[in-house]
Image (tube, rainbow, N blue to C red):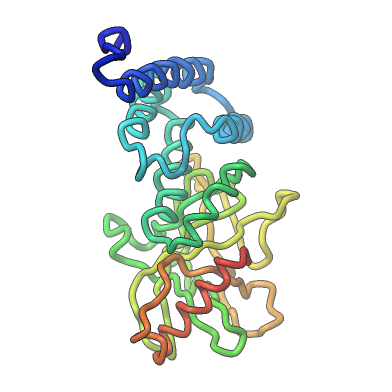
Length: 268
C-alpha cells in the first residue's frame, strides 16, 4: 500500500494524507461494489441520496481535491456504466459542478446545505429542436421582470422543450440553461437555478414532465404563455453567477444580476 512506502520522518503530512486516501478509497470502493446497476430510477435515486449523505465525495472536491474527484469516477466506472453512473455524474458534475464553477461566493456556499439535505438535482441544457447543436441552440428564455424583480423561465414552443434530462424524474432542483432577456435584449445562454419539485415530490406549478419514448429519461419544460403575474407557470429562478462589478450597477443587466445575487444569498 502507498502509505507503507512512506517514512513518517521524511514527510509526516504526506504519510497522513496517504493513509487517509487509502482508507477513503477502500470505503468508496465498497460502496460502489454494493450498488446494483439494474436498480429502478426511484431506488437508484435513494441510493444516490445515501451516497451524498455519507459525504465520501464533497461537491467542492472538483475544485479542492480533483484527484479524489476523478478517482471516485474511475471506481464507479469499473462497475456502474449504466443508469447510476449517469445519475452520479449529473449530480456531481453537471448540477453541483455548474454551481461550483459559475456561482458566486454565496451561491457556492449553499452547496454544503444541498449536500447535507441530500438534494437531488438535474441539468436542463438540451432542447428538442437542437439536434447535434445542443448548447448552441438555446430557445428557452429567462426574462427579467424589473417590477417583480425576478426571472421568468419560458418555453416558447415545442422545439424549445428541454429533452433527455437525466434524473429529471426524481430531482427536486434543476440548473436550467436559458437565454437571458433584459429589456427585450438577448444576452445569450446563462445558467439559472430553480425548484423542480417540493418536499412532497410535487412538481413546481408551471413545469411539465413527460417520458421520452425512445430513451428512459424525461423531458422537462415550463408551460408556454407566461403572461400573468398570477399565472402558475410564472417561475422565479436565481441567476447563477458572481456579483456584478460596480460598472454594471447602472445597467438593466447589472440590476438583474444584483437581484439574482441577493435572492441566492438569502436562500430564496
